[in-house]
Structure formats: structure tokens, C-alpha cells
Amino acid sequence: MLFLILFTTSFVKGQNQDNTLQKILDLNLIEQKQVKDFKENQDRIKTKNATSYLYGLFQCQYKNITGGFFSEMGSHDIFDNEKLTEEEQKKENQELTEYLIKLKKCDLVTEKQFNEFQKKINANSYSYKLKLLSEITFEAMKVDYMAPEKLKRFADKLKNNGIVETQYKELIAAIDNEKIKNPIDLLSYCSKSVIIDKKNYSKEPENYLELIHKKTAEIMPELAFSNFEFKIVEDSKMSDEDTKFYDFIVSIQSGGKNYKQNSFYRLYTPSTGKYSAGGIDSQQYYKIFNKILTDLHSPYRLHEIEVYSDNDNLDEKVFGIMALTKEQEKALQESESYFRPSYEDFKNKPTTAQIEKVIEEYQKIGLFAHLSPLQINEAKEKVAEQENRDYNEVLSAFPNMIYWYDTELGNLEDPYAELLKEFSVISKNEFNPTQIINKFDIEKSKKTTLKFKLGTKSYSKVFKINNDWIDVDFFDFVKSIVKENKLKGQFYELYTGGQDAQVVYFTKEQYDYIRANKLLIFWDDKLIEED
Image 1 (cartoon, rainbow, N blue to C red):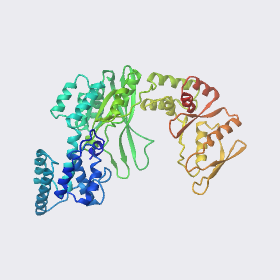
Image 2: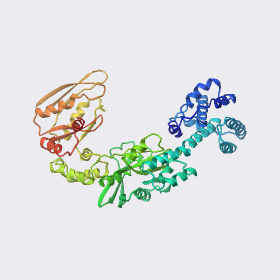
Image 3: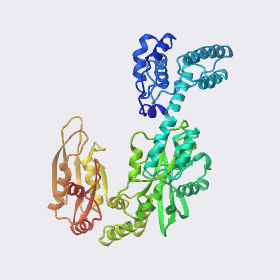
Image 4: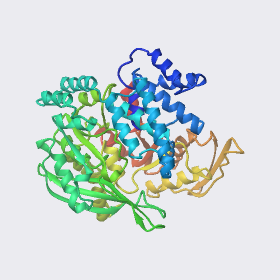
């Protein structure tokens, strides 16, 4: 059914075939009152050929049975076959054959397709007409979607962008010989790609995890590695009483450096005592190799390639990994593409050496004075395992350094009280408000009052209630109190690029040093860039 999404955004719009619609009406495949519905659904298929007429028929038949049109979400149960008695099945087969003959008279199925579906009818594969029609329709979509002329245009696109090089002729020959059955097959002819078929691997991590990483490393010589190790750990941030999430932490050595990557493995449901099947996290595991490419200042990044599949079984998932430059990725994100790579960051992310250096700088200016050596080492491990797009993400791995919150408040009982308490934590209790009172009634009031004491001083501030959005005056109010009380540090906002906020607490000396040496990205850094 995934072909519907792919095909309705397809390539070429052909000519109308009103005579075909007339045949459909003459043979009573639809009634005159259904023509409007038929045409509206037919127009969803951009290529006006037999497939568009089959799709219009399918939707009209589906509406006859269900009262509504088929959609990709929540409409699949009807396709389950019923159990018929031998006599019922014989009668049904006769009606299905008559229906198939009518489709052939309308030139909606070829001789080859007619024979194939007649065999299925004779084998009692269908217990009702809609099941047959759905298979005929979506089989036609497959054929049109994978038409040789379209595949060859895409092959030219791959060649022109340097994605297919020496194997271009072999790719064209494979298209001519109908060897390209699924877009994933195209990757076999691309210069820097591999196909991972999970059916070819054991289900036990100790038997498949290293092999898949080795397969991925074949994409480029620079990705060769040694000393592969992994461990399985519970993800404390994701887990709760209902579900326990478990991750892989993979470590390798490449180019004399150590690399780590955290990726999802499987989950456990305590109430049922069952684990999910688990396996390779195709969206994350390969990012360990992008860390290597970043360190090498390579123009390439690895991307996950997902394409349509008739098989929804995650244990048998087939996916591709491809090395692309920024320009190549952009070309494949455009229309008329048989697969779209995952978006990867080509910005100059911190290298391993730069990350090690910035952590040394943080320690030198006393940012981690509140942490034990064990906490610092654990945070360093976390930094190594995660994807670090900037230094803000590096610092976020260290406890009680950055407080993150959504400006669309999650706590609607006493949100400002909660924020004050969290601000106190990252200030290491230098900013330590007490006797905090904040009643927040989003339904009955347009204002909320925040009261607290800092030392011997009492403070009160009225904030606007704008649904569940934070009042923009809150942060400035807190900063003014810190300044008034002449505390050692001050709160500063980091850049996030979204509606979330990240707050840190530094002394003036720490802030000036970090700003001068560009060791973090503050919210107004981006404003300066834009100016």
C-alpha cells in the first residue's frame, strides 16, 4: 500500500482516456452516480493510464463496502480474507473470473496479468472482489512506478551527480533485463553504498552487530576500524515503570582514535515480562562513522536510505547506507527520486580533538568544581557516545551545568516555582530562593503571582498567563534579582534554535572567557550573525 504515497507524486501526466471510462460504465463496473467519486480518485494518480482507472475502481468499490474511501492509515483490516465453504468459494471464483474478464475488456490488465490473477483465483486466494481488485491495482502501481524509462532517468541523475560511476552501464543493463525490482536494488550500482538485509544476520547481537559495522565500513577505506566492543545498558532517560529501554554502546578504534556511539537496541515491558525483538537501529548506529569522517574533514557523510517495502516485519528490514556529499544529498532530496537519504549535518561539528580540548578549557576555568572525578569521567563517556553538533551539547553531558526547559510550560500548577528550583540547582545553590509560592490557573485567570525570599529579601512578581507559554519577562526578572543581590555569577541563555530554552550559570570571568574563546553558542550569538 506504500505505493499510493509514492505513485500519487509520480513522474508524468499522460492523456485522458474517456473511452475507457465509457467501457467501465457499459460493463457495469461502476454506476453513473459513482463517476464523480471515480474521477476524483483517478486524478490522484498523476500518470493517466490503466493504473489510474484501476485506482478509481478500487476506491469506488471500497466506498461501496465501507462507506468511505481507502486511506493509508487505519484501513487495512478489511483486506483479511474470510473463510468460505467449498460451495461458496466456487461461486465466488466464478464471479471473480467474470470480473477479471471485464477488466481485460477495458484494457486494464494485460494478458500476462490476466493469467497470473486467474491462477490465484483458481487457487482460492480471494474470498471477495475487493481483495482481488486491491492486488491488481497496487500491482499495476508497482509496474508503473518501476517503469524502465523512469528508472533510466533516475540512473542518469545518479550518474550526473557522481553517485553512480563505473557501474553505470551495468545499471542500465539491469534495468533493461528487469533486474531492478525495488529501489533498494539501485544501491548495488552506487559507488559508495551498502545494502543491509537483516535476514542475512543472526538475531543475537554478539553475532550480528560487529558484522553489520564491518559491512558499513566497506563503503570507504577511511572507515576501517579495529577493537570492536559493545555493551547493552538501560536508557535511564527513556525508561519508566511501564517500559525499560535498552541501548547499545559501541566502541571502535580508527586512525589511532577511540570512537563510541549510543543507539537503541530493544525495550522491555515489566507488566508482560516481554522484550521486543530488538536489533540494529538503522537511524543511529552508522553515526559512529560520521564522527570519523568529521575528524578527517571529509566532504562525505553516511546516510540511511529507506525505501518502500511490502514487508512490515522489522526483523526482516532491508535498508541502505550511502556516503554522500552535501550536494549529492541535496540532489536526492529533490523530486523524481526513488529514495531519499536521511538528513545529515555537514556543518563543521567539533572533532574528537576539539571536544577533548574544550573539556580541558571548561575544567581550567572551574566549571566542574562541583563534580567528583567519577562524575567527570562518566560525563566524558556520555560525550563520546552522543552526537555532538556543537559545544553546547558537549557541556550538556555534565551534571547540573545546563537546565533545559520548553517555553511551552509542561507544569501548569506552579511552573515558575519549578523553574526557580532548577535555576538554584545549576547555580550550585548560590541563587537559593526559599518560601516559593506560585499558583497558576490557566483556565480561571490571566495572571499569576510568584512570591519567594532570597536571603532576607522578599520578592513578588505578576506574570501574564498566555495559555501555557512562559512570560518573556521571567528570565529578565530573575537576572535582575541576581544582580541586585550581587551574587558571584549570573544566568545566561544558550542558543537552541527552537522554542526550548537552555540556561547556564557562570561567573563574570567564566562567561567572558567562554565568550571570547567561542566555547559555547549563546542565544544572542545568532542574532549577531544575522545582523
